[in-house]
Image 1: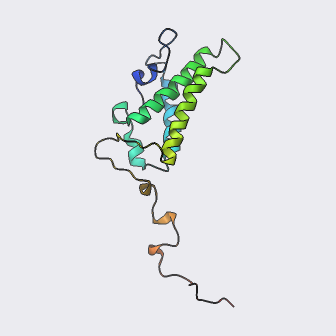
Image 2 (image 1 turned 90 degrees about the vertical axis):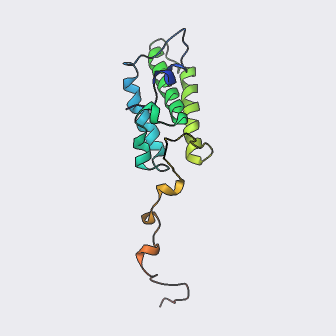
Image 3 (image 1 turned 45 degrees about the vertical axis):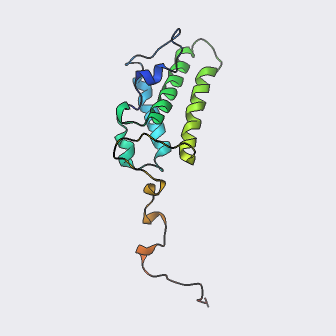
Length: 149
């Protein structure tokens, strides 16, 4: 399973220096997928998140975020042996991707190209069990006009 394909990743890497091949991105795909889905699990149903199994079924915004995160991790690893300093470009990519995820969580960035037939609202993440008491728990045990002795 992967959220981004090689073109989603390599577009963020300087072509004159490095590019990711199919085998090289494997170790980062799972890490990035877990991070993204974990951060968005309270907004989207498990069914929606599990439908993002391939780049073709993943919303474009998520593909872009995943591509940036994988490129950042790959770039950082590739050049980590050459310097003791943090790779500024890798950090910039990571920060941009993380900021986009935070905008999705806050509602400032909306996923517009969900797979066909998928509708998601913030209310989908909640059930009656998230709010107690509710209409399914029976009549109130006390009211505001009752006095306690």
